[in-house]
Image (cartoon, rainbow, N blue to C red):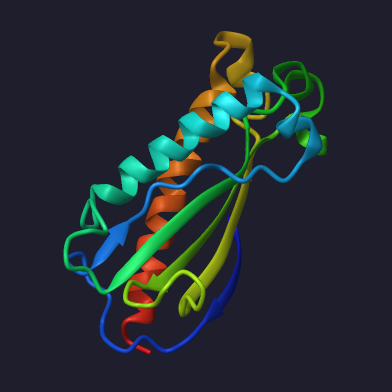
Amino acid sequence: MPKIQTQKLALPEAATIHNVGVVHCEPTLRRDKDLQSPERQTRALDVQAALERELMATYTTSPDKQVRFCLYPRVRLASEGSRSARIWAAELGRGHAKLEVHWELVDANSNNKDNVVYISETFLQTSDAGCGAADLCQSDAGDRALEIMVQRCAESIVKSIAGSSSL
């Protein structure tokens, strides 16, 4: 079950698929070991692109169309976990794949200095990727777990925005 931290303001009008634009963002990795590893940075960029594709399948693809709200999703952590740790100790929480995404729904008409942020949430989910059993059969269990978590994150964002429209 994903953990979600939320801050919300009442929306001035309903956020719909026609008035929300997804803004391309760079990942803002928060751990030193992610910032110092080109491989981890590349993975974060790939996950960021996948998340934006998932969201653009629902929302207007460009904020320069006449949109009321801009959606800024930022990957803060994207780890496929450790295959060997999952094989040996997944039941103890070792080696899990992790995804953390912070996103904001912002008033498109506000300037960058005084952004009105209607929703600010952090999505965090971990996955044992099959508790090590999947790793015995194939080596991409962690990457597949990340793909599933990206889809769940996008679904969570869409549901949260839809639920806020009725505040």
